[in-house]
Structures are given as structure tokens and as C-alpha cells.
Length: 140
Image (tube, rainbow, N blue to C red; front, side):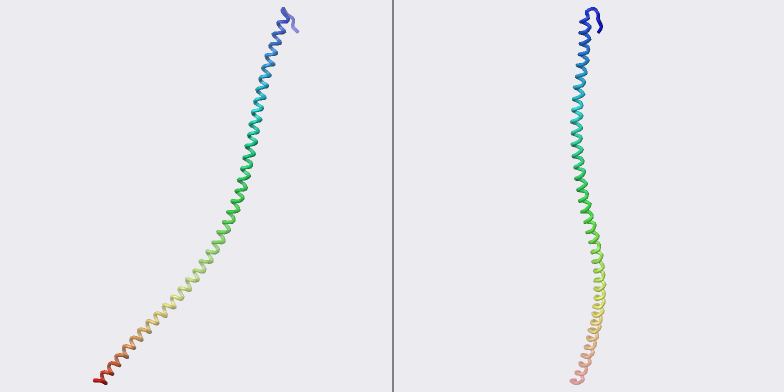
């Protein structure tokens, strides 16, 4: 201890300085504790946000899996429908060929009937003419 004139005064001044420094350190410690508390609260909020984000991502992944499954089912349906459409096109083509064949046959039969009718009309006309001539000869 330093002894000087008015030894008590020096000790009091030194004690006051030490007390002032200790008070400043306590204030700083209090500020640090408050900052730590704020940081912990922010960390907790970040953890909660991260958990929410994790849950959201998991929900999105689950929905994506459901969407993928539905898309796969739709793709299979489309392939099935394309196969059916191809089969239907082939059947329609075959039916068109049949219809064309029947049309040609019917058209040929109609042409033959028309020729037969024309021949019959011509023959009937010739017969009627001959009959007319015969009647005229007989009754004239």
C-alpha cells in the first residue's frame, strides 16, 4: 500500500476508481448477457423457422411424389389411348376399304341394271312397233 500525505484519501480514490471500473465491467457484463439472450432468442426463432422450412420442404416433396405418380398414371393412360386410337384407325381404314368395295359392286350392278332397262325399253319399243305394223296390216 502506498502511504502518502493523507493516506486515507489515496486509498479512497483508488477504491473509487476500482469501484468505477468494476461497475463498468458489470454494466458491460449485463449488456453482454442481454445480447446473449437476444442471440439465443434469435437462434430459437431461426431453429423454429428452420423446422417450419424443413416441414414445408417435406410436404412439398410428398406432394411432388403424388404429382409424379399421377403424371405417370396419366402418361400410361395416354399411351393406352394412343394404342386404342391406332387400332380404331386401322378398323376405320378396313371398313372404308369394305365400303369402297361394296360401292364399286353396287355401282356396277346399277350400271348393269340400267343397261338391262335400256335394252328392255328398246326391245319393248321394237316389239310394240312390230305389233303396231301387224295390226295395221291386218285391219287395213
